[in-house]
Amino acid sequence: MTEPRRTGVDDGADHDEVRRLRAEVRDLRARARAHSLIAEAQGLLRERYALPGPDSAFTLMRLASQRYNVKMRTLAETLLSAPRPDARDRPWFPGRARLAEPALSFPAARQIGPGNRGGVLKAVLSQTLAVVGTDMGNVQLVDRVRGGLRIEAHTGLTEDFVDFFGHVGDDGTSCARAAREVAQVTVRNVETDPVFDAPAREAILAAGSLACHSVPLTTSAGLCVGMVSAHLDHTVDALTEAQLKVLEVVGAQAGRWLAWHERTVVLDALEYLHALGGGKARP
Image (cartoon, helix red, strand yellow):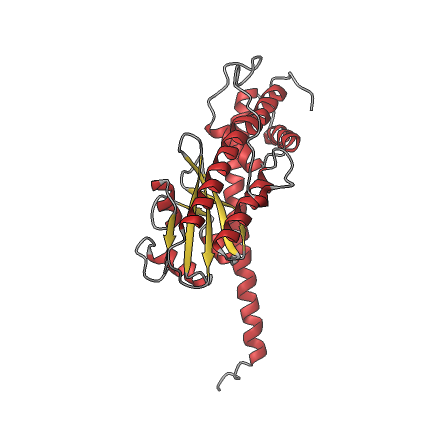
C-alpha cells in the first residue's frame, strides 16, 4: 500500500516547523553562551565576597548593571578579565583617571544620551551603512574572555547569519582580517575572495550578501576594540577615498568612545559592585 501524496499545505507546515525549531536552537545557543559567562562571574563573586549563594551574586550584578546601564554580559566579561581587587574595604581601582566622554561628530550620533553604549553602536552602524550605501550590517566588539569578535548590534541580516557569526575567531572572515591588520577591508565579491573559509562564505551568501566592507574601531593607541561591517546585495568596486576617509573617522571616534566607556562607566559599575560586596554601599 502506498502512502498518500503529501500536499502543498503539508509541505508548508513542515517548512514552518523547521523554521521554528531552528529559531529555538539559535535562541538556546545564545542563552547558553551568555548564561555560562554570567554563571562563571557569579561563582567568582561568591568566592570573593563569601556570598551565601548564586542568587546573592546575581543580585549584586543586577544592581550594578541597572545603576550604570551596563549589560550583564559586559559586566560579567569585565569581572572575569579585570585584575582582582586588593581588599574588600579598599577601592577596586584606586587613583584611576576620570576623563570626559569623547565627542562623536558624525550625524548619526546626535541626540544620544551620555554613556549610552547601545545608542552609540547603533549610530556607528547607521553612519557606516549610509556611507557605503546599503541597509545590511553589524557591529562587533572584541570578546575579552574568549578572544575574537562577537556581534553586538545588527540590522537587515538574517537570523541564521547572526547565529553563525555571533562569535568569530582570528581567521576565515573579512572582519577577522580587518581586526588582525587594524585596517579597512573591502570584499568586492564574496564568492571569489579567498579571505573566507568555506562555511563562512556559504553563510554570507545564504544571507544575500555578495560584497562587504569592514572598518576597525580603534583606540587612540591604535588598538582594535571592535568592528563595523556593511554588507551589500551586489558585487562592488573599491570604495572611494572620500568614503574611506569618512569611515576612518567613524572607526577612530567610535573606538575612542568605547575605550572611554570601558575605562569609566564599566569600571564605575564594577567599583559599585565591589562596594556592595564589601558592605560599603547601599543598593
